[in-house]
Image (cartoon, rainbow, N blue to C red; front, side, top):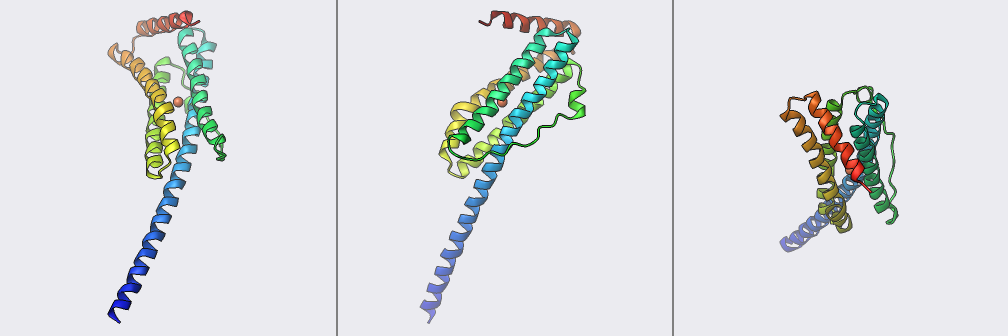
Amino acid sequence: MVSSSILVSTILLVFFSTTILCSEQRNVTALLHDCYEKQIQMEFFASNVYLTFAHRLAYDGVYHGFADFFFESAEEEREHGKKFLDFHNVRNHVSHLRDITISEELSSIITVNEMLRKAKTLEDDVFSNMRTLHGYAVEAGHSETVHFIEKVTLEEQTIAVKQMHDLVKRLDHNNNSTILLQMMDQDLRKKKVKQP
Ligand SMILES: [Fe+2]
């Protein structure tokens, strides 16, 4: 009698453990999917913000180097977003694209100083979500996504974060001086000329 009740208890334990494991697996997979879509959204959002900044600077006509820098950054972010979309497309996963809204606060930024600081925060946020995404991919045992992030996107994002941090550091070390901004703008123009 005792042994049969132990057997029933063991069967129930195995059943519930398996059910809990399956449900946890489903939860991680859902979190991975949501985080992946958020990553796509963030890349295209950053692209649109940089395009807004670039347009503003080109319109003002003072800092052409920074205007070109933000135009190029907008293109890069668009390419990043597209890479994430392509990764899903070839695997027949559906990605839901949602509205990308540039707030009044963002579109009213007019100084290069503020633009660079906002860009630094954006790059940090994108990097942080990518790290979370990588964690979910590992947890879900989704080796293709882990490989894609480690071999393709993480390095690109690390370089983007470094670039924005360096620009803001230069501002901080020189008390946000206008002369420094003009020098940085000239540097960016020279880089543009050197390109093939
Ligand atoms: Fe990016």
